[in-house]
Structure formats: C-alpha cells, structure tokens
Amino acid sequence: MSLTAREIADVLIESEQSRKGIAQFSDEHPDIPVETAYEAQRLFVQSKLDEGETFVGWKLGLTSRNKQQAMGLSAPLYGRVTSGMLSAQGDPVRLDRFIHPRVESEIAFLLARDVGAPATITSVLAATDVVFGAVDVLDSRYESFQFTLADVVSDNASAGAFYLGPVARRPDELGDLRLLGCVVRVDGEVAMTAAGAAVMGHPAASVAWLANQLESEGERLRAGQLVFSGGVTAPVPVTSPGSVTFEFDGLGAIEIFGE
Ligand code: OOG
Ligand code: MG
View 1: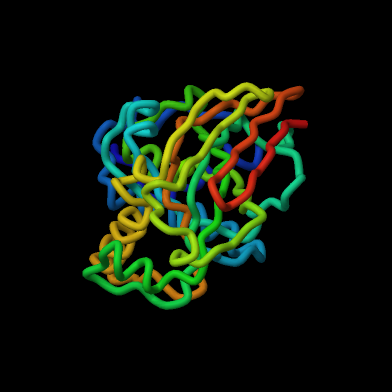
View 2: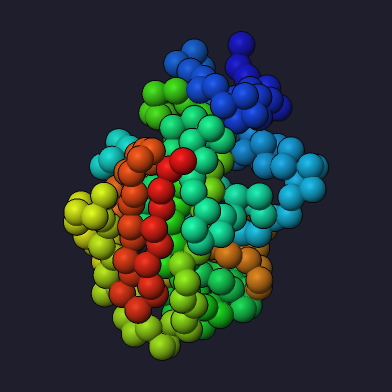
C-alpha cells in the first residue's frame, strides 16, 4: 500500500516535535512520486503556518556538486522557509531543539520584484533587492541523515533554521557573484573554501531554476520573499563545545556554536 501525502506529513510533524529520528519512507515505500512528496512538504509546512508562523520564502537543495556528492543525490529540489526558522546573529544552535543539526554556507537573495518564467540569471539579479551571506542549519528527520529525493522533498529539504549575515548588499555593489568567496572554519581552523560558482555555476541560476519550477506548478516566486540558493560548501555537524565560522567576501561573517 502506498502512503498518502497526509500520512507522510503527519509522521514528519511528529518526528520534528518529538526530536526523534525516523526511518526513511523509501525503505518500505521506494516508489513515492516526487509530486506526492511535494504535497507532503506543503502539509508539513502548513502545520507551522497553522501555529502562527508566516511564510518567508524558499530554500534550494542540492544545487552544488559539493552538496550532491555529500548527499549522494544529483537532482535539485526546493523547500519552504517560515518565520520560526529564522535565527538571530549570536543565537546558539540549541542542540536540544534539533535531532542532529549540520551547518552549511549559502548565499541568500531578498527579492524586490516577482520573478516570472522563463527566469534567467539576469532576470533574477534584476529582481533582487539585496544579497546576504547565510547559514542553513539542516536537521534531517531521518535518523541516518540519508534519503532519496522523495524522502528529502517530503522532509522540507531538511530545513531546521537559518542565519542571515550582518551585511546586505545589492548585487551590483558586490560584483560577480560567481567569484564571491566563502571560507569555513571549524574551531578556528580552515576546513573548506568555495566560491559562488559552486552553486549551478552562479547562485542566481539556482534561483532561476526555482522560479521556473514554481511557475510550472502554477505558483510564482514573489517580491519580498527570501531565497536560500543552496549549500556552497558541504555540511558540518554542530557540536557543543565547538564553533563553525563562515566568512563571506564582502558580506561579513557568521559564527555558529552549539549549546
Ligand atoms: C538536504 C537539503 C539540501 C542544500 O543546500 O543542498 C540543502 C540535505 O542536505 O540534508 O539544503
Ligand atoms: Mg542548504
């Protein structure tokens, strides 16, 4: 018997609330269609909106080879971001609020205008108000932190929390986003380095992919929405004690610590 989107969403909602990891749905149900998974994601996120959170935007997943290799999946996907996921600078990642959090660097776009299809790097940049360096705190509800595309789509692209960096700049002030460098330090030591081009050749290409994808589903990327364009670097587990610092060229630094 195949699972319905409602059944999948209810298991994920319970897992997130109880902070208990679950087995991947694909273990028993390898054929869940991706459309069912997106509907499960919508219901999972709707449960947060029903509790008073607001919808703030989108997150892209698996848009860089660094991420695709780390997770063993090659197709991009999207998830939804709500107000309760936004953390303030200096807030610790509370280890008792998550199952097994990991952090990764991202480039975030705040849109000044809607982005219709066909979207391109140029149309995304023209519609962008400002760009931030950002951190995606992933927390897969799957106990193994492994998943198929349908599993991770249902699980809202492992969304846990997000941090925006201290500096917001217009794309034309930043220069070429492909060359925007990011240095990741774990406990002070340089652990990874990458540049914006790691994300689909240009981070705005990932936002364009999302705009085109949403339009094909009868939705639209809207003015005022925030878009996290996907991990530039591979994820790093959050520990206590321990710190992970993300330095972005021209966009400041974000320091993450577990507590
Ligand atoms: C899935 C979510 C992917 C990204 O930026 O690639 C993602 C995961 O890696 O858990 O957020
Ligand atoms: Mg991410």
